[in-house]
Image 1: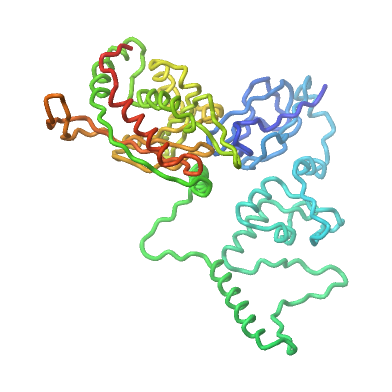
Image 2 (image 1 turned 180 degrees about the horizontal axis):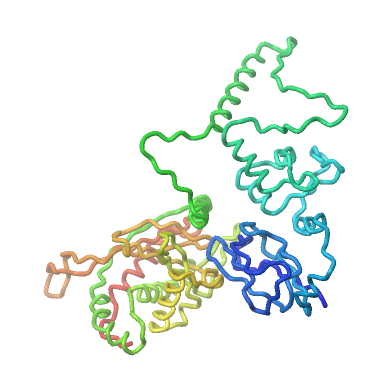
Length: 461
């Protein structure tokens, strides 16, 4: 019999960690190869993780709701064992079990840092979850070392650090309240003014006191007045919020707008949609038509499908188009149509419908949301006539299409100008001004507009 390590799988090029949502097996249970062992969640999608071997669960190293780095061992499977033989095996001591959980990400304080040691003078270790919470809450390693731990050998548990965060946000003292060790005398912090200091020390003291009052005020809990309802963000909304802010901090956003007459496109779709659905079993929407136009124009202007790496521009030759899709919860997710330039309109339609349905029913796979090189978002679905979308990092551009509206417009003909009722739509392009100048961004957007306006209403599908 041998032990097989089950590691947190790689779920995409930009994903570094995942949250364990649910374990379907416990220690000692039999599991088959490819049987679902646990559910995990990333900032993009929830997914099932199958077992890579058949045997008995020897050990489960992380709990539900733990955030685990990609590649970390999360469970051990004894191959060739049965449940009875696994139970008969000698169980490891609690100390050993806990050590296995934390050995993957130990924290070794530098020699110059004060080391807060446990009673047996061992170096303190921190679980990935504790380190993740500390990073999110802005807790320094010096603070972390001084948090009393209730775990074995004084280790900090999730409960310990959350309690510390709660006290800190409440404005209470967060100093270490553990009794001093033998030979130490308790001390009190105080502001001392030396009589040998120059007169400017009064000004320095005043500045220090102001800074202390400012810090104390920042730690006070927020008070909401009036009739309010407080709603905690769900996990996906928190991640979306973080990504939006990170994108604004990363890219120099510029948005250009264009108006296009899509009358030919609208009339053509109306003419073919019934026959297409009857033949293909799929409804043809406007989205594949928009993606087709975008792909044609990216081939002319390839910098729109790129990313920035320091001072390098990485041109993506594989045209993978992301499409923002609304979920029943109100959140958005961006499934990706891989190699969209190699698909005809029928293929694009089936990909669009399949990914949209998978997104709404929670059946997207991790690979379905990775590798995008350009994104389309349809703000017209919600009634907006135009929008200024935020770039989906590490891409450099995103296009929004607004609602199609009938409007009276001036139509130029060889016989002269006339006013006619046309189907009009605004499109907008947000792009990264670090590498996409206004000229290129506007030229690309105008090219997409012309592609839609000049749609061949006599084409067959």
